[in-house]
Length: 279
Ligand SMILES: [Zn+2]
Image (cartoon, rainbow, N blue to C red; front, top):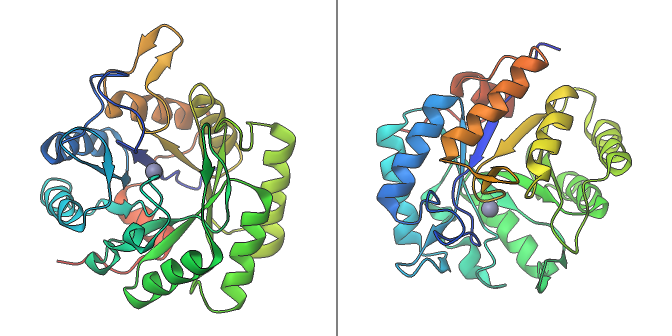
């Protein structure tokens, strides 16, 4: 298995705070610094949310713009993926940053339960977010919290709502959504291959202790991997992760274990069919 593995670092998210782990970057300057260290450690995609001064989540386009500027300056070439989820509402404010033209944005195409609430992705909002991504030439990453989300992505591709072959991320281990179940994972993967072709790139993310589990499953099966403090703040049950970079290094070690080279940002851009880096 020699396909390079793209490592995505989800630096902040909308849930963990400094009370969970002081290393969670919440200001723009902390986020840029944390991304830079993760980039040096081997991450080629940064998945980002932004926070208010009190650490609560926001989708403020002005903050996203400052974050993109800082990452472009300190991590030239790194793929920037902004979150349109972020538990920050069910309205169009979730896509207010898309005119900034990040390389990628996350796109949830259906609803499901989250630990304490419903993760609402109503059809009209999904259609609107997908249309905005087409308009601004932003590649979606489909967040599959359920099997139906993979099939929905296929339908949207056939309808022309998603331009390229959908790039799907299997998300497992969110409480009250899909657990990290190996049989389901294998069926997800078989479904992606059946719908999008044997060579279609895909990735996976696990929440909490499942982060390491999903890294192992994805890397051993030829997929791409996500890590970072958004999904998990610990190295093991007793140890907080010192940084996003520490989690990236753990994922790099799994790549070594399975003889997968870690993708450079140039390789990652090619694998994902992204537009050339904008100046
Ligand atoms: Zn996120």
